[in-house]
Image (cartoon, rainbow, N blue to C red; front, side, top):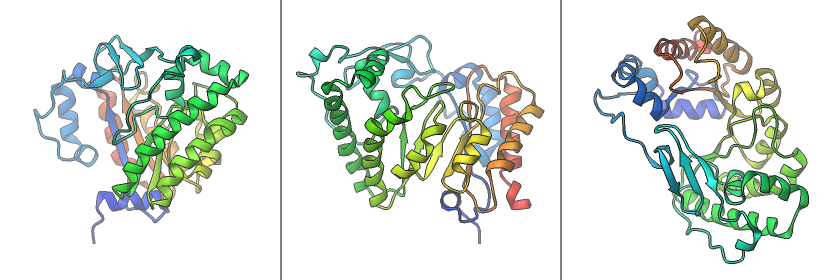
Length: 322
């Protein structure tokens, strides 16, 4: 009996011997805009990865939200600036840059989903990164009020999400920098871990898996995130190191491994093969617990995009054929 992609996905999450390693290739809007029909040809050659894509179905120059060039204001009043269509912008205007503005600030009405950057990042979107770092050191009473406000919003949205009885809920919040955490693990455990525990706990109590994405170095708090209820973690291999991820994650939580997007623009197809093979051998097993993700930015050559697809198709069957 054949296994559906959905069933295989959950077998991987639950360590129930998936038929193949689930793999994805994420093509940024700017990558589509640059390569256009040539990229479409690659997608059409790899239905195992991209599904039943229809030629001509994509508008290469259509960009949504903060992926559009220009200045945008989100529902929290944070001001975003983007200098290039197809890539994400950054927050340049912070509505709570001064604590004097907190008393009269009103958060948005809860929506139907949580955007990327829902907790930690939202705090510094509102306050500004430098201000928030100082807040964690100085610990003003307003910090607790700010955290409670953002947490209350997130819990209200999460309640709406779990009421729809999903099997898995996706969350994204970048907790790391390139080679370290922006705050100490102790501050994370004091201020942020209780928030994630409440949000993720609501999902787990409803029977849903918790998928958590974070860019940056997060090795020191992966165990904390697992304790909070994360069942699938999506870390970056370069920022955390493969051996460290093996130590912290293997057999404990399913890893949707974000492959080395800083390698892809400059390497050879053989480098890509070596990179993926090492990850599969060290982090994977017949029991499951591994998925692979390749995010492709516009600086990756077309031949390397093709090599990424071929390599993922090759190693997704590594434990099936072993």
